[in-house]
Length: 414
Image (cartoon, rainbow, N blue to C red; front, side, top):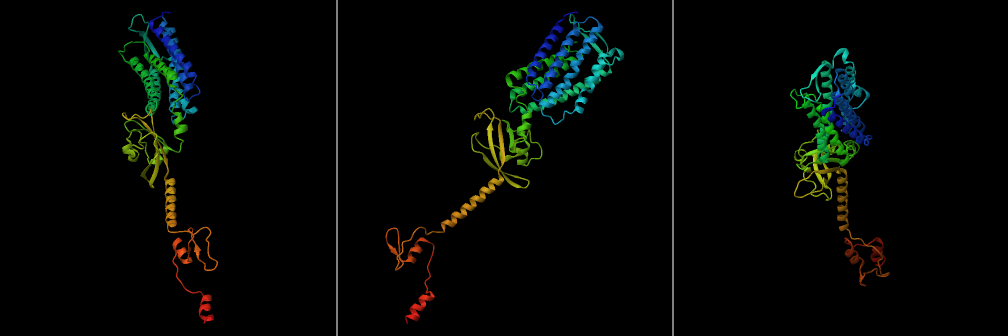
């Protein structure tokens, strides 16, 4: 056995990955937490046995340690993909069938690695590396190695796509967490690029595993300082997408960075407007309302089916600074029916007030003379019935004689 700088470095990296796995284990119940834990365990296995391979002096042990390292290497990309799908709340279902597809090539590769002496589909042979005192070798690969490499790269690329999408979607809300997530995705790809380059800086050293170790350190930082996996995109499905109100996040440049289905429905939008300016999508929403603590503003917009009334409330992310534009969240409610009811109520009230203005009511007790029928007012003066009623009601009298009085005056009296 020969202890080299590379073996010490890879051994240290495996310890870092194991520590990251223990940190991730605390979040195993969060979506993607358990898969992330197993990903770090896979990185630890990969790095440790790659380091053991650099300590070997004979071909048998080199192939053996390399084959064992493939247990970690071949499991890291599919586990990382499962983590990415669960963390990003992807629509791709993780059914037994999809999981078996993910692991079909990795499992076959592990089996072929341990039986390489029978077919040489993984390794044809190796030559000593060009860096002295490192005990590294450069392997010459068979056809299955390239098939497996393509498959594992494809899984890693899909995982990276989902995580990058999440990072950009969450950037307006959790900037630091999004940046760390992006870097943790990019670094392993840089390590892979350095490893596959024919004139790489360190021939024979598996820099891809070192890239995953850097990612582990970054994600551990996110765990300890930024509550990584506590603030996760799945909350969006459970809250934002199920809420009846429209939810729109607008960045400092007035571009829409997130929107839920309710907002699209309220605004009459058929395609996702993410990345577009509010001015281009719904000009009526631009700048509404002016202050974070203002009462909600009602905007009138036209959509299929006619004009609607939308109540818009605004909150500013990180507080509102007048000198510096900042991202804001718009909460939208469709209040068309409520506004119609209010307008109808206001119209009825106006009609009633107009009618009451035209009517003067007589109410209470009227002191009236039992003999002459004059009515006494509040000041003690007596008035003829006609004068009193005309003064207190919109009434005019037309005088005539009833049949009884007619007989009394002209027939009986005459």
